[in-house]
Length: 185
Image (cartoon, rainbow, N blue to C red; front, side, top):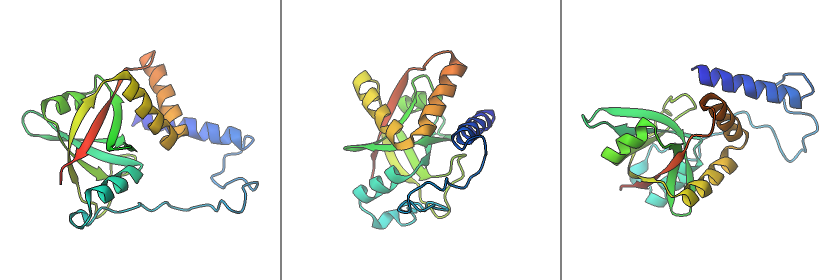
């Protein structure tokens, strides 16, 4: 909760600075007319009918989401959900996470995961169906770096702010891994 408040404050400060000291959620009047303001961005596919979709369609729909709730499982079988950024790199879906996180330890013990579209704070999308998958941990530095670039392009300023806050809080960059997710259908 505190991290999200810090992130919101940073975003507000950056936006205010870009607007010449005036905080307003209205877009600047200098935007070209070909770039209309979008009030809300609908999900590409609500994933409410995954049984009728092909694996490629489900992969594309999940990759288009900004956030997913990834559920991993403890040794006892208890489910633990985490909100994460998700991206698609050529053949597979992946999430980018600190190497020492508990989700990585749980995936190493039990690779079964479920993915469900959600909002920034983990609220599941209404009508969205969870999608089962198998995750494996990728530690190869070249692959992690390449996938981090995909995440950086997809999330832009959010990525930069989150990594900045993380570096400041942890007094340096944390080692990261990729969880490659293969959908099981």
